[in-house]
Length: 267
Image (cartoon, rainbow, N blue to C red; front, top):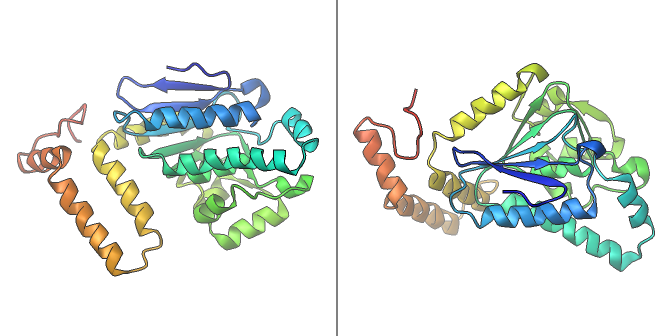
């Protein structure tokens, strides 16, 4: 399924897609090509209505070490307008990932520096290893985590984002869980088993219902009550109840049988 140089798209027989960052010799560091290919990969995934969810991972020892050194050297020679073009392409990646219709799960191991925290934060959920090392490292080299900052603030909160963006401290997977950036962390030796457990759990759910819930929660945002939001929520539940998957789920529940989207009976 993959015809990329820096990525690998793998469609599991059960339907979900794993999107692998695939520059292990460069610790999956970002460059212009990887960013461009990620944008194209996300567009491709978004066009496939059969995908129930997406798992984002890194090949090799690290999730992603941040920006590629050679790319940074090239960027240092660019003028303002060229740098603005680069920033807009990175923003396309982050915003398109955040808006992707199927749910997204990031799996973090090894290092996750700089822009990698943007990818993690733009996903709906993230898990990782306890010993993962994360860092908003931009200020160490005279830069700022500008494009990724809205997503990082949403994922870990304004106060924590301010601390780690200003100090460039490294923090562990355990600390990332405390901050809410990672939902759960596990010993490195147990990570693969736990990824499979998360996958198995997501496969129990209606793909359509997950997409509708994701879109609904994006609209709900912080939950500020308004007449328009009330109408939207009412319309959402009415619409999904009469949909094909909604009807199948209700019938299956009442008939005490697994719905058609489940490959195996519910435990």
